[in-house]
Length: 317
Ligand code: FAD
Image 1 (cartoon, rainbow, N blue to C red):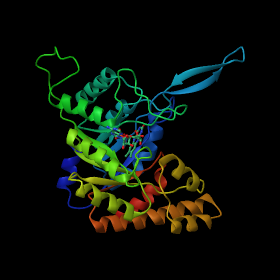
Image 2 (tube, rainbow, N blue to C red):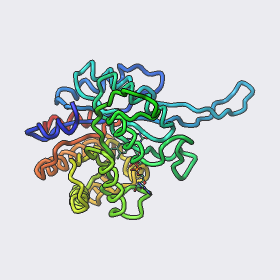
Image 3 (cartoon, rainbow, N blue to C red):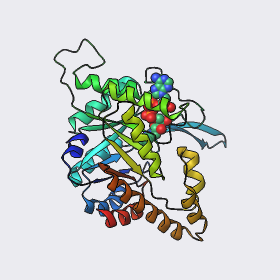
Image 4 (cartoon, helix red, strand yellow):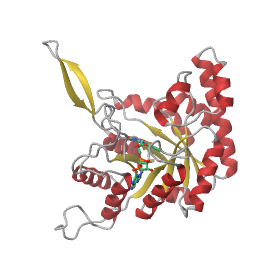
């Protein structure tokens, strides 16, 4: 079922979450252990992130370092099929431009279509760690909008090889990312929202936001999107803080602000267990306000740890 159908048919705020594929070589059961408790809250869908290949240095026998390329968290497509089968929920694989040619993307989309997966979250991906700007593959997409066009074309039966006749159209529901505190590369929020609008006009059906800790930023973002003419559902993404060092790490990685009140609470914590409790309380409060405001779904970034999301969901769903 499509995410937009889940949203429009729901009578209450929906609960969903995002998982990461296990590290290369780890069993899928490590993921199930994390997911099993959360299924109690009946998420209609679960997102699975995609991770591009990264360069790592390996020591050779002669002592020299060798640069090799490795995907640390492979398996997004297979995991989506496995989760769908095990829990009977819809899965949303993230599809990224980075590291993929258009043809490789088409192959992945064909696999997803065969597997009965109805949704994709389309993203550009971040620059690789050694580069400051995003570089697409020689025959890849520079922006998420270009990948939206590709999926949309497939939905119309237009594949990359134009000589294909009687092509079967896919029927993917397409999600894209939005940034209440603007994407780090955008000159300002309004411009970022204009590019977001272009993604919607290219065929995207719904938006999931980057994490934020101040609801007024999400509300302002939604208002600005509506002013710009974006009518699609905008699902808020929430991340409960789980350890003290995230105070420094999250703003650096995700280019988001942590409000003063939350910083002060976290600074008082002497242990990570205390910080986790502060994170849970904050997230519950944020969720309650957003539910009252009428959001269609609350989407949690579990980042491989289910404990906090479980305790939040137990209070709310
Ligand atoms: P785009 O929409 O392409 O935008 C990128 C930047 O380019 C923005 O600053 C935008 O304003 C600007 N821009 C857009 N169009 C144009 C244009 N025509 N001309 C000039 N500038 C333009 N990353 C992963 O690698 N794997 C994941 O699974 C993953 N999941 C995510 C899930 C969510 C909900 C979010 C919010 C992010 C996720 N990311 C993931 C991170 C994401 O890939 C990065 O934030 C990336 O830097 C931007 O992706 P985008 O799809 O927003 O890019």
